Structure formats: structure tokens, C-alpha cells
Image 1 (cartoon, one colour):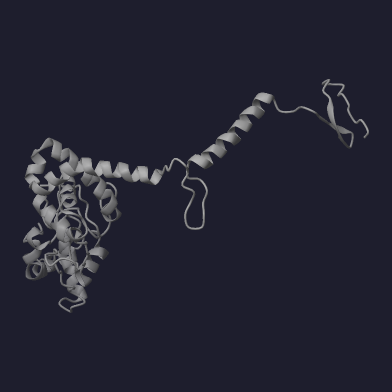
Image 2 (cartoon, helix red, strand yellow):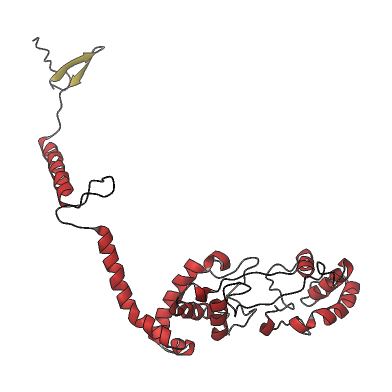
Length: 290
């Protein structure tokens, strides 16, 4: 066999004997310490395959000699965490809302649980900061359709609004004045201008004058004589700048013409009593609770 060994003139390193287009490959093997580490990792990997679950099968996986399971470890940790919480959860279920608010330790636990429950169940509609969006109320301000006391909030969360889940669901059916042919378009335009005048945004004084009589005849029973709103019937205030669907002329006309009937789930049918109390206390604390 021909001897193709060659020593590079520049580096003084022997080549492998391979040559291509006048280019030779230097024979520079990996350091032994690197090779030993590499071999050690192979041995480690083989040992891991034997000791721990590692090889997927058709319907299962290799269990390993140690029988370790990360899933079982997580399940056990969750079980321990629930057991630690259960003491407080039992207290929450037995305590009244006022007792929860006046017990610092219980209140701290309820606030943490309420915040987590809100992010999971309520933020999709009311926003991550409870700021609300069109059609879904802001929970940070002082305007409440059904009352902002902690008891009223608890009742609303438990039973929801206009749903078929709870017999005690909040219900306030505003007439669709145009659709029901109670008022014509001209009258609706006038009453819309009057409603806007309650918050100082009307632009047609003549329509405001005509709309006042229509408002007194059709709207006062629910919204109050000055448009202050009545929580007993879930009627919003009309004399401020807070609007659930919008306070511009076109939106107000649409609301009067066709009504609004938003739906809220009865969370009392979905969540446990302790979580409902946590939510009520948390929402009440956001700044708008009364």
C-alpha cells in the first residue's frame, strides 16, 4: 500500500494523505480529553435510558428501573398544595362576605384566589384589568347596573344576567321602541337628543324640548326622573359620560330603537361557593365597590 504521508511545510503537521485539487487535509485529531468526555456522555445516556422512563412505545413507554414519573411528582405537589389551601377554603365557605373582608388572613387568601379566578373566567369579557369593553361593564368605576355592594356583586356573579341557567338571573328587558312600534324614528331622535342633554352633549335644543316629554312618559320609571338610573331594575344612569354601548347619537338611537340584552353566565352553576366569594371580594376591591 503506497505511503501517502506528508508533512505540511507551513504548520509542520502531518496530513491525512487526502488531496483534492492540490489541497491537503491536516491530520489534527480531537483532544483525548474531549473524546473521553464524549464517551462518558454516551455511557451516561445509556444509563439514563435504563434508569428513567425514556423509550416511547405504541401505547406506553419504558418505566425505567427507578420507576420515576414527573407527572406523578406534579400530581403529588398539586395534592399537597390543595391540602394546604383546604383549611382556608373551608373557612371561606363557612364565613360571610363581611367576615372575610374583616379577617386579614382570610381576605389576603380570598384576594389572591379571586384575582386568579377572574383572570381565568372573567377577563375574556371584562378585560384583564376589569376595565370593560363595549357591551361589558367596567368594574373599576362607581357605576353598577345591579348595585356595587359586595352582596349585590356576589348575587350577580352567582346568578348572572338574562341566562337560562339560574331562575334568579338578573333580568331587565328594555323595550325596543322602534321594533315594537312604540315610537317612530322622529320621536326616537328627539328622545335621544334629550338623553344626550342629560350629560351635556346634545346639539338640537328643539329636539331636546320635544324629547323630554317622551322621556317622562316612557323612560322615567326605569332610568329615574333625572336619568340617574335605578339599580333595582338594572337600568343604567344616563346623566354621565359612562356608557356601556356608547354615548354617541347613532349608538343611543340604535339602543332605543332595538334595545340591548347582554347575557352573563350564572357562575354559581359553574364555580364552587368559595371561588364565588373570592371573586365577589376581589371585584369589590377594585375601586368601584360600594
